[in-house]
Amino acid sequence: MSHTHPSHTAEQTVKFGQVALTLEDVVAVAKGANAQLHTSQAYQDYIEKGAHFIDSLLDEEGVVYGVTTGYGDSCTVTVGLDLVHELPLHLSRFHGCGLGDVLSIEQARAVMACRLNSLALGKSGVSYALLKRIETLLNLNITPVIPEEGSVGASGDLTPLSYLAGVLVGEREVFYQGQRQATSVVYQQVGITPLTLRPKEGLALMNGTAVMTALACLAYDRAQYLARLSARITAMASLTLKGNSNHFDDILFAAKPHPGQNQIAAWIQQDLNHHEHPRNSDRLQDRYSIRCAPHIIGVLQDALPFMRQFIETELNSANDNPIVDGEGEHILHGGHFYGGHIAFVMDSMKNAIANIADLIDRQMALVMDPKFNNGLPANLSAAKGRRQAINHGFKAVQIGVSAWTAEALKNTMPASVFSRSTECHNQDKVSMGTIAARDCLRVLQLTEQTAAAALLAMTQGINLRIEQQELCQSSLTPSLLKTLSQVRADFEPLVEDRPLEALLRQTVEKIQLGQWEVCH
Image 1 (cartoon, rainbow, N blue to C red):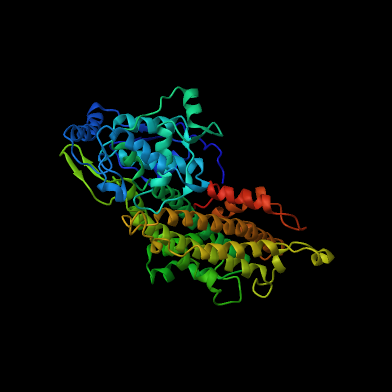
Image 2 (cartoon, rainbow, N blue to C red):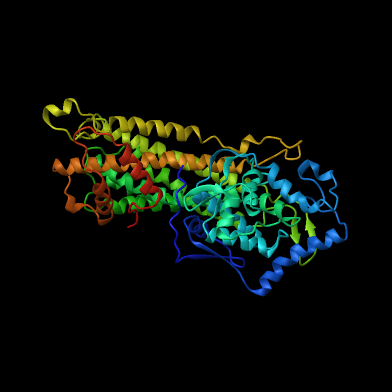
């Protein structure tokens, strides 16, 4: 996993405090945009009301979960007022047990943006100084090192978010200037004084859904792009196979009006220059992986609006416990840390994405096999004459696509149904939202790998059709020509066998950066 510095878009600033964030805002911060917390005195006073209300309860010796009590099942344990100010530090420290790979800098910045936005709603009893510190870290590109394993998704992302809390108090490690360093060393270097967390602030930082929500925002961004890219790949596969473009006719799709499905069909139709090349093959009906591609990709396209609604509602929610109503002076104990909506979106998204991997795998199988590819050489090898006997084209790449697809399909088991009772049966039903999000990102990675292989293979297939004078390049649509020209700039036609790993990795990276032309 890459831990390189994100490209900083200094000209872009995302505002926090009195405006709702979008998925795109989180992605922008993840990629390096500045954060700007609302600065008006009225807003600062609003935030401070919650913190002052907590202080007043302590003065009155009130009982507040996680402030004057232990955490979780230990809520019956009373904490003496002389120890209350140490409790947040202990919370951050005993949760410092994450394992596995660590989040990328981009992912960790997204986590910080999500947590800042939730706390900036003013329902968590934190100080304005805490919000400013997260803003400062984002703008200085000081990013917590966050292990990705250890959250069951309720009571929030406790363990991974403890690494943000730990950094705020000057502990743990950060990524800074391309290096993994001790937080204390970096703070000395840039002149930052560690925070002393106020009584509710440790719980407010950690008891929420920021990690799963951040990963969901990034997953959504990639899934949205992948839907368009897989439509483009399908058009390229259809040309490679001399397919029947009538399968994507707008009159046909008017009879089954799922809007996302029909959008996919329209994109493919536009790419295929439908009216000029209505049918190039002798087959009345292409195989399902071509003919039904809009129905497969369209499931994701139609699901994206509800997925956005779920993710953005979670993003713009106060999702810790207890909720602090500073104005009405109420402490409201509940379960807003539960990540069920994000878990459902991530479980659903990985299923739809894996189906696209399976679609591309089937398209690849068709174009490689001379029994099905309508006159192309086996494995799309461009070798000639006697050299054909020793050259194998995309044979191994297609095996790789099958392997990546199989792994993607294996990861579609919904994580949310594997709830485990934990923490002395206090957390007896949990969301598993963060595991679902990590699964979804893995499925996306594997599917992007299949897409990278297909971009290369279908470009080779179209090149062969042009070479065989079965396709005229001048008849290709501008949108499809743009993609072909981009791929050809990196990819010399595969005539003699050569290792393709570096090219495949480069192509995957360009997919993840959204650099392949997919718009019309």
